[in-house]
Image (tube, rainbow, N blue to C red; front, side):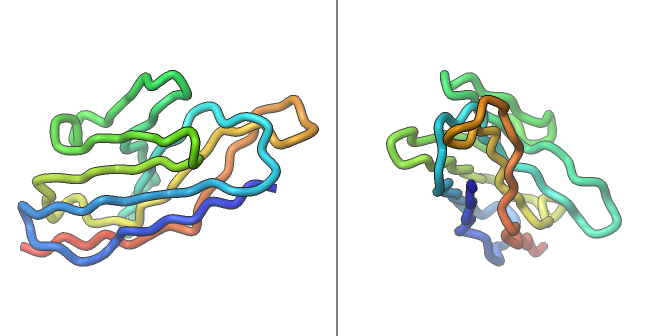
Length: 121
């Protein structure tokens, strides 16, 4: 019922910046937390940043101070501004949304298809 579409990934040199965006659509009653996860080849998917509906943010230690997560509740959009990118940031970035579908009462997890971020040396 909830569809997430990511955009903004690409190739950037170390030290550069990218801005990822994710928009949720569908029959949504309420969106709670939204966030970004990433997965590099051969590694587990890891949390990058999350933001609650009330604007409380959480960051992985390795991105804190470089990345900023934000959301636009009116547009059901979450963004991730990534600055001072490093080669180790290279991964597929996945948008995540914890939402209550319309007509339901349970919070469910939804995932986007992922967008590739590649940081070159």
